[in-house]
Every structure is written in structure tokens, then in C-alpha cells.
Length: 214
Image 1: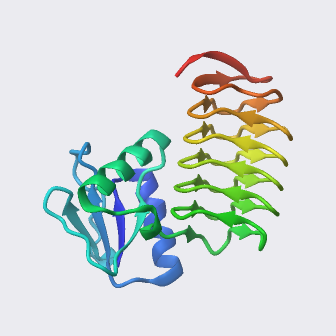
Image 2: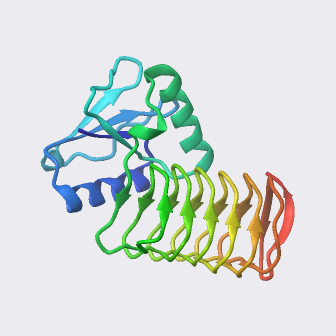
């Protein structure tokens, strides 16, 4: 059974799309994030999506899990909650890779990767746990991508870059080669990152500049 933990409407839409395109599973379960109160946004019964509540749901031994959210701090919070409450450790999260994505055979990935359609991860790159690589995004060779990172649509990261844990890189940004972005930082959309960015800051622009703390 594939089970999505927590959700945002846009991210879960794409997760379901890739799950059904790849495997056509009989049913997908969605466990609502404890912080999410709105109604589930999908009414099509053909999708066979079952909604479960975190406080009463128990995982089965054959369940495998994906993140239905993309923002790094929410992914981390969802992981911590379900690890503590349901003992769902990192090894139970599956990698979900769209058929149109390209991953080099030399890429090393942790669990919980979601590689959306037309994304590319090139040679000798290492990808951590719980990483989201959105549509039309690319990661160059010999990069190190930390845990819970979110790389938004149209982002291009050149070679030999180091992206810290829980970094979020906004839509359409470009990261030059040999750049380091520190843990927990947020890069605004359309930025051109030509110099290292420290941890825990918001930065944007062309060239990208630090604008303040997260």
C-alpha cells in the first residue's frame, strides 16, 4: 500500500499523478497532517483515494510512504511526528520517480525522493532523505543535496554544489557551479546564485543577496 503522509493540494496532486502513472495501484491512502484541517480536495471516486486520520490510523507491515507536502520544514515536521507516533522510520519511505525523469546510474539517493516529470539528476551526485525535485528542474554532476531539500520547478543547479539540509530553492533559480547553500536557507524565485549563501537566511535577486534571517 502506498500512503501519503500529510498533504498540500498541489503537491499531493502531483504525487497521485506519478503514483498512478507508474504503477496504477488499486488504492492510495492519505493520512492527514495533524496541522491540516481543510477538506480533502479530490472528489473523483475513480482515483480510489482513501482518507485516514493520523490520530486513529495504524500502519500495516507492508505499507510504504511518500511525502504529500513539499516545503522542507513541513516535511521534517511530518517525518518527526510519524516517527514518534507510528515508528515510521526513513527506511519505509519509497523513492517516487516519474517515468520522464532522468537519474544517472551513478546517482546515490536516500529514501523519500520525489523526482517529478522531466527532472534531471546527473552523474555522481548524492541526494539525501526526503528530497523533492520539481518538474523541469536539474541537478548537475558531483553535487551533494541534503535531507528535506525542495528544488522548485525550473531550477538549475550546476556541478559541484553543496545544498544543506532543509534548503528551499525558488522557481526558476540558477545556482552556479561550486556554490554552497547553508542549512535551512530559502532562495527566492528567479534568483541567480553566484556566491555561497550562509545557513538560516532568506536570499534572492540577480545576483542573489542575503536579505535577512529566516
